[in-house]
Image 1 (cartoon, helix red, strand yellow):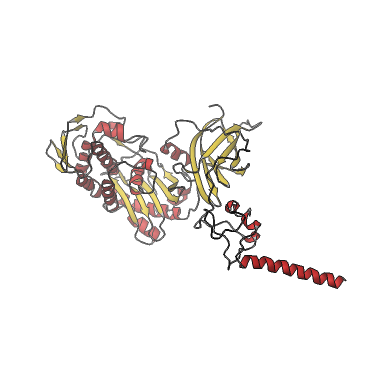
Image 2: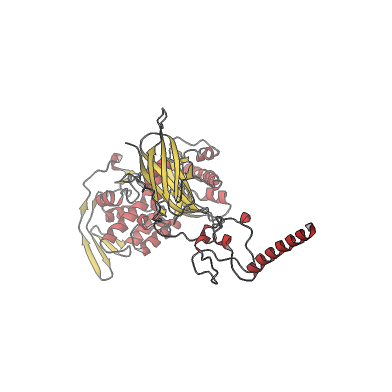
Length: 516
């Protein structure tokens, strides 16, 4: 009997196995485990009865001739595969969790203030030490790796020397990009574009677009002055150079052509059949830059180029609301301007001819500067780079040193693969609640429990003032993290939510921990 039992058992196993294989190869459709696998959450919404080709927004069912591998061998989809759809629906009625109390404080901090809090201050220190000369006191470097973010570019920020936010240098011709944008903004407010003919009462006449092209492409000082006169000194500093546009500290008050830009002469704008008279304007205020000069930092100078050259990728709120042809012309001037001081260094770092959209600057005996977007055409990697080196009376040498400095910085950035990214908020909604942890007070600051709601996410990464904080799941679409050694008050909190390895939500906020 024992032999018979063994025979029956073997036959039963073979029958079950053959039946299972027959179902899969014969088109009867996936079994219940395939439809509800914890490894593939997108399949949970698929009907339990096979109804032919998939029509819902989930991965296709198993191919009849290519059976699905065992569940233990399944892997989440890679980034280039379509992810399972995330249902856009309110929580189930049985969910009795209280709504989170968002920790955000209004007004939120500006883009520039957030950048100050998260910029990497150490990575480039080793790179600049590799230059084969002693860098003079006062040199400064700002750089950013342009990374793929949620819904657009994200940026990993770096600085060295005096850094991205110092204004202890003369910005020279680098500010010409800002004046050009301000002039375009003014005529746009009157319904004109850069194609308009500008006839000054003083006698100068040309299209605004031609004036801007000479100011940028060949760095004409006289044409720079004309762009400031078109913009108007007060409007330039009070309405264009604002924190909302990305320029909270920049001031432009100085002529480069030997005259004055404080008084704009009357001018007439003509475009097609339209003509408009603009009466003389006089700048009545001083804007706080020493000697009524021009004050800027590397971060804000680079912001202007970033928002022009990457305009098709960045959010609408960051774009300059100008005529598309004007922005294209400005882009063309920046990407074909006089040779970049970074060029030789970028060529050496990449091993190929780089693409650079930039604006240089130099003074007779002080600084040599360059700033812009640099692209490695071989890899597609893109970097924002700005640097200034005091010339100490030898500007040609300072320019050569900028090239060497750029080479070492770009080599160092090419080796970086991670880092805290800064980008505008995008993707799925993210809500954060901050509460004091029980018994969390200490000499080095408090402990705070962060509760994060991230719809559709299966993982979140959290940073407090640029410091990573480990997060763990706390139920469906919720996560908790504990911030230690953090005093009560306002902090920069960044949350990056992902689903199956792909980022789906980003938020940076001024968050309040306890009482301020």
